[in-house]
Length: 151
Image (cartoon, rainbow, N blue to C red; front, top):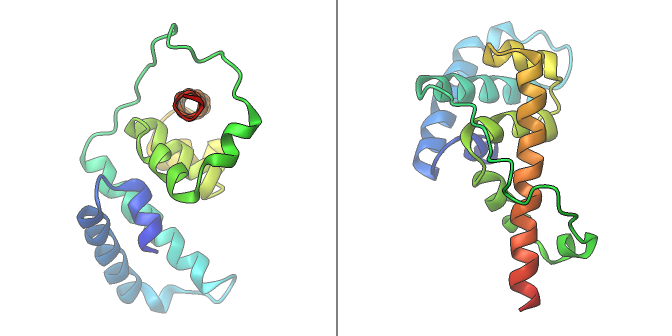
């Protein structure tokens, strides 16, 4: 569950604080677990919700990217072969906060745009556009890495 927290936090200490808060909530609410589905899934949802509440205290900012930042270039599929899991996680962690949270919720956690909109108190279209922008941002970063490997 710490890795879930790390995806939403700025650093490991903040992630540990989020995890501690989440497990306190799990302990306090264990009697509410209805044994309908996995226990791990129930805990994961509490951890994600705790992380989101923690992020909302920081006032989430949904940023706009500059249109001329080279986002329309095609990434060579082989560029992804050189990336390890750690490299990918670093790239995701480097996303602007609004992009990163929507990307994590949609791609990694599997929430729908409707659910994300409800969780973050945003429009569904904002969730969709933030995901598109996050993917473009990541493609641009992979292109940069591809160029540095080619040199």
